Length: 456
Image (tube, rainbow, N blue to C red; front, side, top):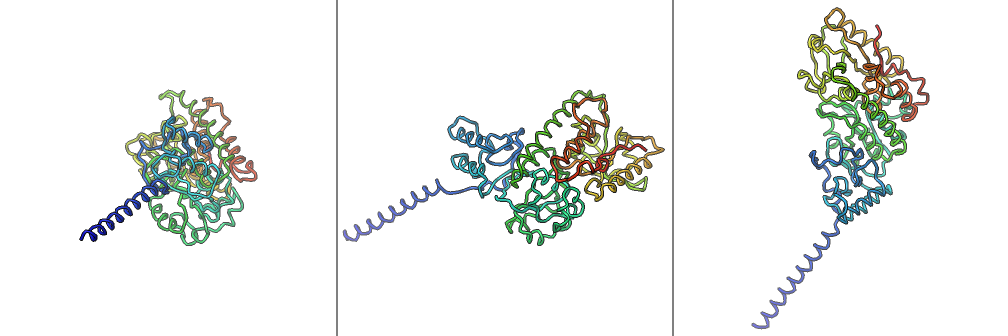
């Protein structure tokens, strides 16, 4: 009996020792396990956002400036040492902790290693892109222009009909690209078959965005919800186009020298334009309204931009009193209202915003389209109590990197005596084409295909 008890006790002791050993092993593994990406898909609330001054919302940008470089590695070491304050973007590997792993991860990002890079998309969710990025797909004028700023057009393996049919003026090579059709109803098989790494959406579309991820992510394609355009069915402001352009350039491994050159040019224009608009008293501000349709029928209802539409935001930056931002009858980015309602708003400047520019094929055809729509506007309001100054602007001029020219256009036309220290919008337009696109001969592009003032 005693012998059996000793054996039993010995067996129990062995089991306990084995269990303790297993527990120790698990604890050791827990300390070294790779939980990278465990916060992927998290929706950030405003208090969790990175610094508002940062335009590179990419994890690893520990000091939250506009670059990821050795300074971020140094800053991370300061966080680890308890010297520097923690930041949202310091969690480079997105495991929910800030530690030495993030420092190592950031060093890999700086070196451009093949890896997962995490960022915050325009839905304010943690997203990922897999490096290297060799092939991309994109859509809409905003997608094409963003890739142009990144100087990454050779990475486009497939695009939508807008780009393949109309954007040959940017780059003749677009004409030979395969098309996945309309981005509102894309041919997913052709996108997958193109062997792309990243799909840049071009603009938000509430009816398509969720489907894109379910179709493309399982095929190893990262869907990049970064957009510098207006939006369809997503009622949130999109005023951070500069942030989006920088992030797209960085995340698709574009030409960062060109991206930072654009940013420097952009910042100079915006700082001068907004400083000038800041000198205007409220009583001096001209009222502004933007229409997105111009029907032939004088009595037809018209689509008008409203609250938080990006064009209205840009007009306010230029110093305009944007009726769409404050009128209770225009609560959404887009709404259709009657001609009588528009007349009652009595805006001094009425902007016809339509498909023109490169997005409407031939340059001269786009010029004529804007002129036709502005003439229809005059016919509509002629003889009524409303007689606005009529402007015309291509929709793509307010989307993507060209939006800084839109701001200057408003300011030049609404306040010709205001000294903003800038060249006119037409000169800035050609500078943009020459330095931040693939257009061979910028001087051959007619600025009137993008911006016009109606002269009767």
